[in-house]
View 1 (cartoon, rainbow, N blue to C red):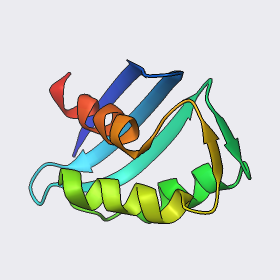
View 2: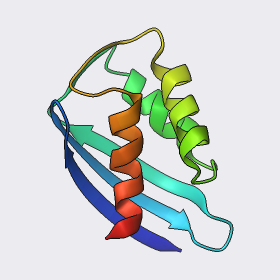
View 3: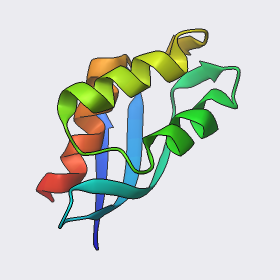
View 4: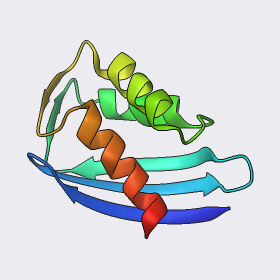
Length: 92
């Protein structure tokens, strides 16, 4: 199990803390925060829950983000920048 942390400045600040299984390359736990705006606020919890168990593949992650947030109002990030923030955890 490995841990990673990343802070990405997109339109707003995105902070991601990630714990992942490096053997099968899947997300074990994830916490997303920052100074972005998201309505309803529970959408971020839904996103975090839906990312657990997902393989760390850019297209899969981006698709989950888009699906979870399709009925939300977002200011400060898009699915591309959120995907980038998540994958930034793997580099550090």
